[in-house]
Image 1: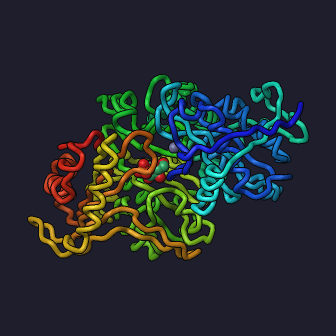
Image 2 (image 1 turned 135 degrees about the horizontal axis):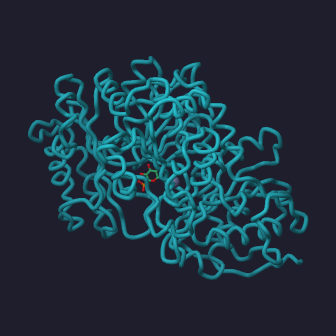
Image 3 (image 1 turned 120 degrees about the vertical axis):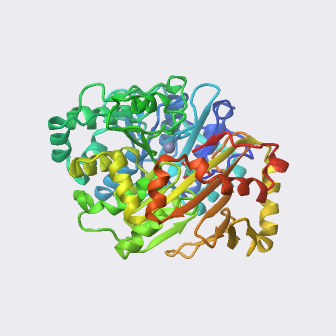
Length: 553
Ligand code: G1P
Ligand code: ZN
C-alpha cells in the first residue's frame, strides 16, 4: 500500500449549497470530481492529521464507491480514525448523533461526512451529494463551506492510498495504513438516544393494549433499518409496520420525499375507510418527516407547533423549552405557541444550519421548517424518526386521534392556513429576473392595497445571527399583510436542474367559527385570493411561462 499524490485540475462548480454539494451522479463520476471535493474539505480544515471523522450515507447509487474513495483519501491525508456505518449506511440524524456522542469521550472527533442528496431521487441518472458536518454534529457554517469552495478552485493535487476495497459490511476494527476504520452498527447509538428522550414503556403499552394501528413508510431509503429496530423490535409494533424498509440504491425507482405526492401508497392506506390511526414517512437520508392521521394530513408547520405545545408530556422535554425557532417561510403557528409559553421564537433563513448557533447557545430547544423538517437540541440536524416518536408519545398519552389533537390545537392557538407552490425546473435567468424585479419593487409594494389585502411590509429577508452577529441577506422576498397573511418568494438552493421558485402563502385564522368551517374546506380554496395575488404580484407567468405550480404542498 502506498500513498499516491495525483495531479488534478479544478472544477468551477463545486460551491456547496443549502445542504452540501449536490449534483447528478454523472457529474460526480467525472474524473477526480469527488476526489477534488474531498481533498478540498481536508484542505479547508487546515490539518486533518490525527483527527477522527464519522462517515456514512443514505445508501443511494454511488454511496459505496464514494465511501471507498473517502476512506483511502482520509488515510493518505493523515486522518487517525474513521467511524463508518455498516454497509456504508448512516442517516443524517445518526451521523449527528455519533459525532456528538463520540466527541464527548474523544475530542479528536472533528466532524463527519454525509453522502446523500436527501429527498432527491437516486440511481445512475439521478442525484448524489456530499456534505461536511462540524464537531457539534451540525452542517458546516457558511465560512467553512466557502473555504471548501475556495479550495476546490485552487486544487492541484490530492492524496489517496492505493489499496484493495475495504470491507465495510462487517462490524469491527480495520486498519488502512496508519488509519483505523471502525465499522459500527448504523442503528444502535441513534436508537439508544431515542430511548432517552421518549417514553418507550408508555408507547409499547399503548401499541399492545389499544386498537391503535400505524405504518411508517421508509421509502426504500436509509430509515428502514432504524425504523424496524425502533418500532418493530424495541416498541414491539407488529412486523410489517415499516413499509418499504429495505434501503435500495435507486429507492425502488421512487422519489424519497415524504409528501402527499411521493408517499402516495401510504396516503391511500391512511385514506381507506378502515385505515390506520397514524402514518408517517421519512426521506432519503432520514432527516425529514411527514405525519398523517386517519384521513388527515398534518402540515409540518402545525406539527412543529403541536410538538412545542405538548413537549412537557415527553420525558426529554419535561423540564420545558428554552425557546423555539422556525425558518422564515415556515408558518407563524409556532410563534403563537412561543407567545403562550412566554418563550422567545426566532425567525431564521431557510436551511438547517441557522439553527445550530441557537441550539449551541441553548437559546432554543425545538425548531423546524415548513419543508417537513423538525428537531431539537438532542442533535444538530433535523430528525425524521424523532418527530414520529414524539407524535407516538403524545398520542399514547392523550389517547386521541391525530385529527382531534390538531383541531383542539387550532381552536386553542389559532390556525395558519398554509400552502407552498413550487415552480420546478424553470429557466434560471427568468427566475432570477423575477426575484430581481420583486427586490427592485419592494419599496413600491410596501403599503399597497390588493383587494382585501394591504401590505404592511415588503422586504428581502435578512438575518443577523443573535449569537455570532453574522448577517445573511437576500433570503427571500416577504410580503406581510396587515391582517397577518403572508406571501414569500424565494429560489431553491437545493435543485440540480434549472431553478425552482418557491412561493409560500399563509393566512392565519383565530376566529373559532371560521376555524371550524375551515376543517371541511380545501386549503387551496380558502387561499384562492392570496394565490391569485402571488401570481400577479411577481408576474410569474411573464418570467417563467408557467400559470400554475408543479407541486403544491
Ligand atoms: C429545501 C427546503 C429547506 C431545507 C433544505 C434541505 O431547500 O426548502 O427548508 O432546509 O431543502 O433539506 P430549498 O430547496 O428550498 O433551498
Ligand atoms: Zn433529507
